[in-house]
Length: 178
Image (cartoon, rainbow, N blue to C red; front, side, top):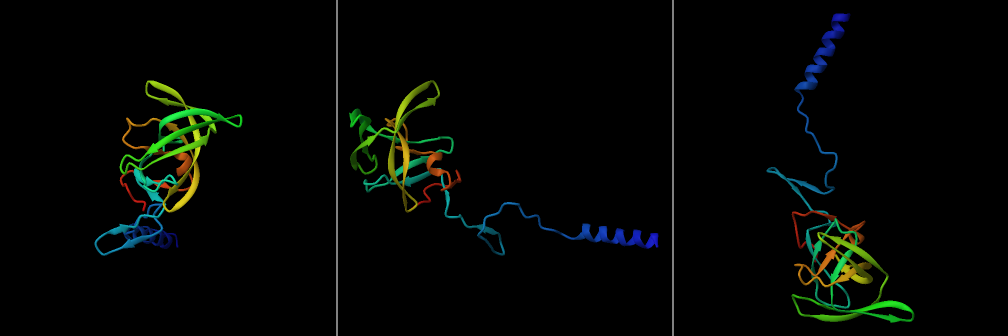
């Protein structure tokens, strides 16, 4: 009887070892299309690239924006930034000019707070304002630091305050949003 059990266990182990199993990753996209030649992954709607277009209503033309998962707060390039007081609160007026279309608009916004920005060899305090943002067909409000970013390639930087709960970033792609 013992010999029979040993042979049975041995046969089972040999059968298991001979069976070819396909290892499937623990995390896979929900919508995978298989073809005879290869597996084609279809990008989920919430995956965006390293550079995307966003709108800042009421402006009509989009801004090419750097998507930065390392930035806590989004940032906006502004010109002619002027601080003033209205009804006992701190406000700023600033002009935004789209570098691609030359569309310009002057905003007046209350300052929500001022935050310290730490960059290599440079620290500064920037005002934070709340802006309307349109991204991927959805309009919402988000905080932006306001600074002169003319030396940067992109006029807006989209940080985690916008990305969190809205998008996953794939840095190997760009310009996925309509």
